[in-house]
Length: 90
Image 1 (tube, rainbow, N blue to C red):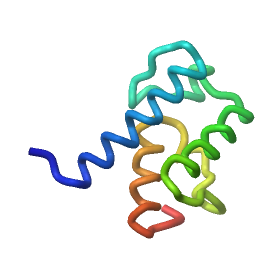
Image 2 (image 1 turned 180 degrees about the vertical axis):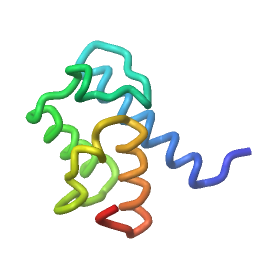
Image 3 (image 1 turned 60 degrees about the vertical axis):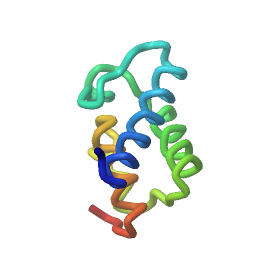
Protein backbone atom coordinates (compact mmCIF):
# COMPACT_ATOMS: atom_id res chain seq x y z
CA UNK A 1 0.00 0.00 0.00
CA UNK A 2 1.34 3.45 -0.87
CA UNK A 3 0.76 6.63 1.08
CA UNK A 4 -0.97 9.64 -0.44
CA UNK A 5 2.36 11.43 -0.71
CA UNK A 6 3.96 8.55 -2.62
CA UNK A 7 0.97 8.41 -4.96
CA UNK A 8 1.13 12.15 -5.70
CA UNK A 9 4.89 11.91 -6.29
CA UNK A 10 4.38 9.02 -8.71
CA UNK A 11 1.69 11.05 -10.52
CA UNK A 12 3.98 14.07 -10.90
CA UNK A 13 6.85 11.94 -12.12
CA UNK A 14 4.60 10.17 -14.62
CA UNK A 15 3.21 13.44 -15.98
CA UNK A 16 6.70 14.90 -16.41
CA UNK A 17 8.03 11.75 -18.07
CA UNK A 18 5.02 11.65 -20.42
CA UNK A 19 5.55 15.31 -21.34
CA UNK A 20 9.24 14.75 -22.06
CA UNK A 21 8.51 11.63 -24.12
CA UNK A 22 5.80 13.40 -26.15
CA UNK A 23 7.92 16.49 -26.81
CA UNK A 24 11.25 14.79 -27.54
CA UNK A 25 10.29 11.35 -28.85
CA UNK A 26 12.80 9.79 -26.44
CA UNK A 27 12.53 7.78 -23.25
CA UNK A 28 13.76 9.49 -20.09
CA UNK A 29 14.83 8.17 -16.73
CA UNK A 30 13.89 10.09 -13.56
CA UNK A 31 17.59 10.51 -12.67
CA UNK A 32 18.88 11.47 -16.12
CA UNK A 33 20.43 14.95 -16.26
CA UNK A 34 18.35 16.63 -18.94
CA UNK A 35 20.71 19.55 -19.47
CA UNK A 36 24.03 17.68 -19.46
CA UNK A 37 22.78 15.31 -22.15
CA UNK A 38 21.35 18.01 -24.40
CA UNK A 39 17.76 17.10 -23.64
CA UNK A 40 16.62 20.61 -22.84
CA UNK A 41 17.18 24.06 -24.24
CA UNK A 42 16.35 27.18 -22.25
CA UNK A 43 13.17 27.62 -24.31
CA UNK A 44 12.12 24.04 -23.64
CA UNK A 45 12.84 24.52 -19.94
CA UNK A 46 10.42 27.46 -19.87
CA UNK A 47 7.79 25.33 -21.62
CA UNK A 48 8.32 22.77 -18.89
CA UNK A 49 7.85 25.41 -16.17
CA UNK A 50 4.53 26.45 -17.74
CA UNK A 51 3.47 22.82 -18.09
CA UNK A 52 4.20 22.09 -14.42
CA UNK A 53 2.37 25.22 -13.30
CA UNK A 54 -0.70 24.37 -15.35
CA UNK A 55 -0.83 20.66 -14.54
CA UNK A 56 -0.23 20.98 -10.82
CA UNK A 57 -1.65 24.42 -10.01
CA UNK A 58 1.63 25.71 -8.57
CA UNK A 59 3.59 28.90 -9.17
CA UNK A 60 7.27 28.51 -9.94
CA UNK A 61 9.05 31.82 -9.42
CA UNK A 62 12.07 33.48 -7.87
CA UNK A 63 14.47 31.08 -6.20
CA UNK A 64 12.49 28.07 -7.43
CA UNK A 65 13.58 28.81 -11.02
CA UNK A 66 17.09 27.49 -10.28
CA UNK A 67 18.52 25.07 -12.82
CA UNK A 68 18.98 22.40 -10.16
CA UNK A 69 15.19 22.19 -9.73
CA UNK A 70 14.87 21.16 -13.40
CA UNK A 71 17.99 19.08 -13.97
CA UNK A 72 16.19 15.74 -13.48
CA UNK A 73 12.61 14.51 -13.41
CA UNK A 74 13.14 13.58 -9.77
CA UNK A 75 14.19 17.17 -8.97
CA UNK A 76 11.10 18.56 -10.74
CA UNK A 77 8.91 16.11 -8.84
CA UNK A 78 10.43 17.23 -5.53
CA UNK A 79 9.87 20.87 -6.51
CA UNK A 80 6.18 20.30 -7.32
CA UNK A 81 5.70 18.27 -4.12
CA UNK A 82 7.29 21.05 -2.06
CA UNK A 83 5.22 23.78 -3.74
CA UNK A 84 2.03 21.78 -3.25
CA UNK A 85 2.87 21.48 0.43
CA UNK A 86 3.27 25.25 0.64
CA UNK A 87 7.06 25.47 0.76
CA UNK A 88 9.03 27.69 -1.59
CA UNK A 89 12.59 28.64 -2.23
CA UNK A 90 14.15 25.27 -1.46
